Length: 221
Image 1: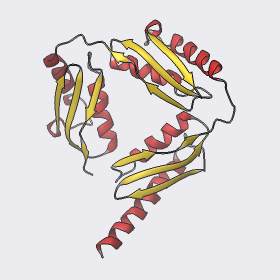
Image 2: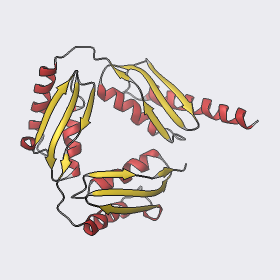
Image 3: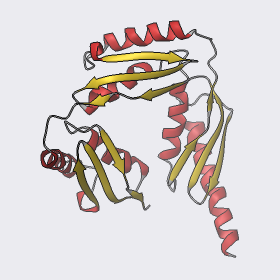
Image 4: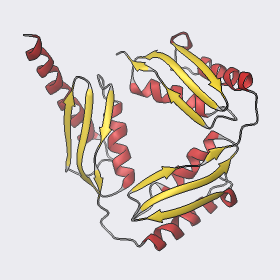
């Protein structure tokens, strides 16, 4: 009886995720498959851009009942770009962003996959660099290796993150514990949805000096 209940729950979750994907205007492909197993969702199939692949993942994560997502979607761009063309477009996109010190960020491209290297002062600059390139035509994936130069003490970093979480309207700070060491922030506790988990991680990344975030937060709907 229990196995039958679990099987039905997986079926219900799969239908919910599929509905959200069909409803999301950023997910245009009809070739995305969904499999579920006890709250874990696996996405398969093909899309036309890396941005669409990420959109499908976000859609799955915000579906009620989803605890984890494995994104195995393949990117098959409609128009083929050479690595030189993608690299040039990425460099131009970084130069156009006022919030990215583009002289400190280096771009390499291999088979359509963009690699970002260098150092910045803030987590949002690292995120902005990735945002600048992930929607470019011909990009099939992004690896963000940009480091963040720490400017604050470990205690100050931890305090800044705790303040950010405490002032965030959608987060219950009582359910989240923060530790920090050598620029690495670790988050512990539980939240009600993947969206809250993302917000907690974003709050940690917003603190100056944070170059790595390890989230041990559990999702308890």
